[in-house]
Length: 119
Ligand SMILES: [Zn+2]
Image (cartoon, rainbow, N blue to C red; front, side):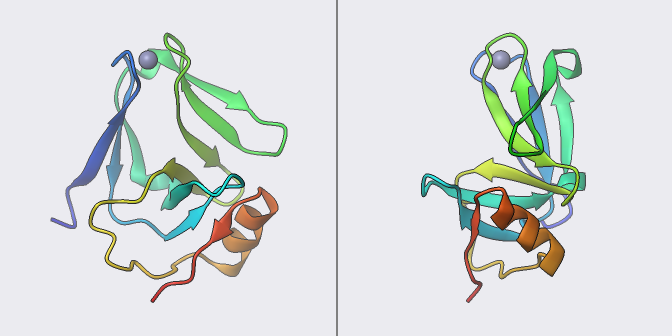
């Protein structure tokens, strides 16, 4: 199962969906303490709705991937770190460990995220 798409995330109106492949690099929390998972940006593919995808530059850095119809933000992408931040913890997260590079980790922490240590 490790080669196929991990899963799919869709916005509220269903116009935009993204496919997530592979495994997360690490788990963490955002600035508000909500659980997030860090994925390689290259693991994210557009399932449908490429025309609806809007990349919204954020003041702190990186971009929000947003549906142009319903305004829902599906993830935060950071080109500098090459990391996508998705809300929630993957269902099969039996301790993926931390596969982030030191530079990626510093970048994410500079953006306000906290990286949780692996087991
Ligand atoms: Zn939508």
